[in-house]
Image (cartoon, rainbow, N blue to C red; front, side, top):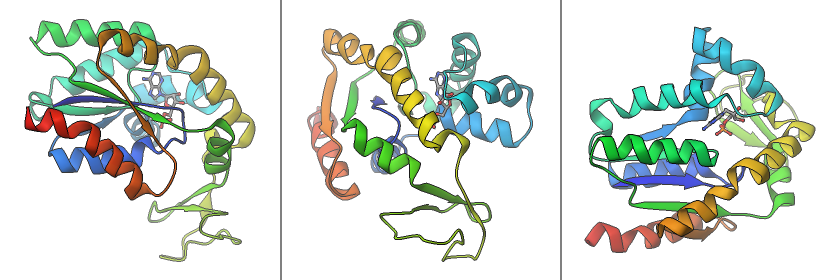
Length: 217
Ligand code: AMP
């Protein structure tokens, strides 16, 4: 199955992508994760992406599309994949459609995670990551009052793009550039909206219910 997840930053795409991809035994391909790995690894791609990411802007399409084309050409993505964070604008969606048709393939479904904007700001600006083990904590939801990881004792830090002003900018970018994808995929007849509030399990349940008719097809 070929799936795209869309939704504003902080909708829980990464978490849901993980569950859905492992349920379907398909690779989860997250452009944000690939960019972050390249930034930490100090690669040429990371160097190109970093300034855009730090500002909360989109990395230019030519850089992003080349990276996605390479990743989708790998063997494990041949029969299915879940894309998390791509496409992020209509030109990327059109390119993806063309790319897949070159391979005689097409998307099966686009899941839109729907969540309120203020909820997103609260989720993201309270997020802290452990420098040592990578675990993600939340100042409110985990009642985290110090900057120490309860699991491994490492120091917690806030991603530059999770600072409140950057989060608000990322949301503007989402509204301007990414939200039009909802209409694009509605017109293609493959959009399914999922209410992304409640527990992680509840949201996963809704997503899997939307996928069930395709799995049995
Ligand atoms: P994410 O983890 O999906 O929120 O992505 C983090 C950052 O990576 C974004 O704010 C963008 O700067 C960049 N990024 C991720 N995916 C894309 C994409 N499809 N197009 C352009 N930039 C992207």
